[in-house]
Image 1 (spheres, rainbow, N blue to C red):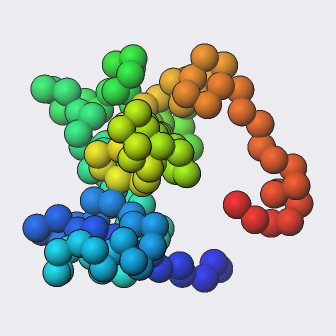
Image 2: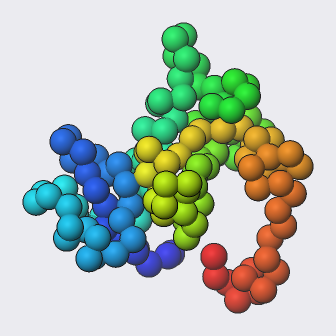
Amino acid sequence: MSKSKFVWVQIDEEGVPIRIIKTAKLARALPDGQAIEWDKEDATGKIRWQVYERSKNEFGQAECEWCSRNVRWEKGYPDSGEMHERTFRGRRDTEGNRGEVSVANSVFICRPCHTGPNGAHGARRWHKARIDKGTK
């Protein structure tokens, strides 16, 4: 069983996480009541759900936000959708904003658009050293 990791999140008016904040200092800079500590896995899941819901067409079918291929919420299937950050964490976009896990910075895309040979990450390979050490 993995140990829970807590992160700072920005919440919307309904108390749902919309953005994972990198540092406590950045969290304190938000208006009162907008930043709280939250379980990282749960916060990421809630953000992923909102991105998935946004990807639905007028018939209620989720589609890849890049190629319009039908995708599903459940992980582990060939047609499972995946959340992708437009600007990767640790990098800056053209306006100088850093990438983050957030509803605004993420898209719900199909596996070929995410990790296929012509996808966002190309034919990215796992880092063997990270697997051997048991880290992510």
